[in-house]
Length: 439
Image 1 (cartoon, rainbow, N blue to C red):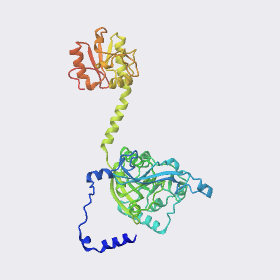
Image 2: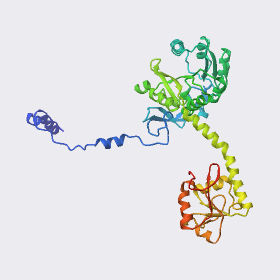
Image 3: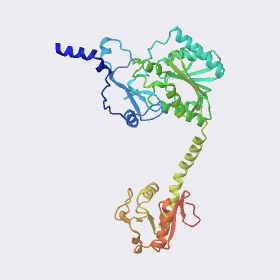
Image 4: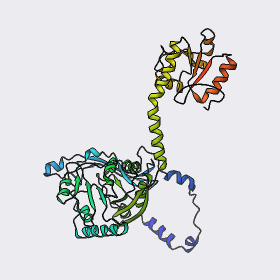
């Protein structure tokens, strides 16, 4: 040991050794593109609740988390026996939303339990007062019909009611009765967009609710679509906890099972925009612990056009089926034989949707020889090749797939040399295939 120490001392004070160049070391360099591949998150089975991206980073997983907001146990034994739940916390790589997986809304007793988090401090009450004053002044919330979704005991609506507003609250839990005691028109039920047809709200309030929803995008889309259908454009005021400060400070106690969503400003905006809203204002508040948004439904003429088209299509289906059935029945009654051209795919779909049974049309032809000897799915007619018609003459051919009708017409006329009438399913019935036919 002494010899080793002396050698180390000699090395330490030898100026020639100190000034000698360091030996080159071969350090493998990682190409930037390879590094990016290592850092990119894999696609997962978990979709972001705000933007639906499947790319996310794992923050942490807790397998034994009890509820911490609702369902307060009243004995030590009850506390120890509480159900333990999985909380797998992730952050979306696309919009930054923080959410946890394995969430089950049915695990939380919203209908029977109250939110026992203490939110009655003086600074929080002052914040409410200031927020109401600001929203009333900036968005003219006076003499309006205001609906709060998840109104709790109605304290926020009570403040808004002081500005001559007609305030209506929805609260599925027992707090609805306390809201009624404050003079609020309160309903002990979950809010649905369809209620807007009757309520004709000028404004919607939704504070500290959206972070609890298993499908917040569906919730907001339901409202935006209902607004479009009802020709309403209420202002939507929403507030949720803001997770950005907690992420910066590495705080883990902000993650609660009841809060399946933890919003950043960007993910909150993304959620509303994807749901069909125009964001008018978004800002962090209360020492950057919450974020508020003011939005309104975007006009959506496409949605109305789709609705009209779907309604028209739906009304026509029973008439279409009757028209085709009547035509085929008439041909059968008159002793005219028909062959169906096409036995699978769109042809099989038409045969089954119209109800073209083997008794009504037993002959089925297909251009693809590989299908010969098979049977039409559902109705059971045997599928034949075109040469079958050489020994089984027919009067009409119904071409069951429109997009290939012209090719099939050429095959029937030129390859098979048949001179029978050709029909296609068009304009809600059977129409003779002519050169003027617009397929």
